[in-house]
Length: 189
Image 1 (cartoon, helix red, strand yellow):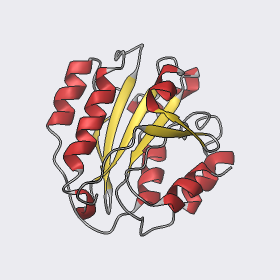
Image 2: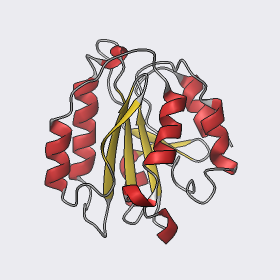
Image 3: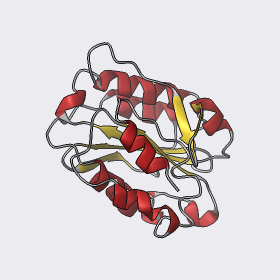
């Protein structure tokens, strides 16, 4: 994040229709929501704003085992899960955990690898995902810079490997930067 950058509270609905984030959340019944946070060197100054955004969204959710579930993953060079979808069942526990997150730092920024990591390790039954029960899966990407790896491959999973899981996984995409190419790639059919 550049000094003076601000969070834009909107999301992209498949394929590319921007709408306010609250409409994304309100249109889904008890979704599983994964926040994927850019923790690379480029977001050091803006990381508190990312955490504030996550906290504000979580405070508006109806968190619970049979309600909204939340996971937070931070990435830079590698991805690291801070907590899974089945780790916390109260809003307060999630907010406390988010407040305790520390910026990891590091280079390079590998958004493509992070997206694959989330797909393979977080949107799974063992991590608390309820996609097999038909629960909407939502990914909110908070990104502060251009990826050094390939995001085309994870984006192409929309019609193949993400099928069934992805009906709403790309529904909410929040990008915290100027990389419009990333937005375009992830929102393409």
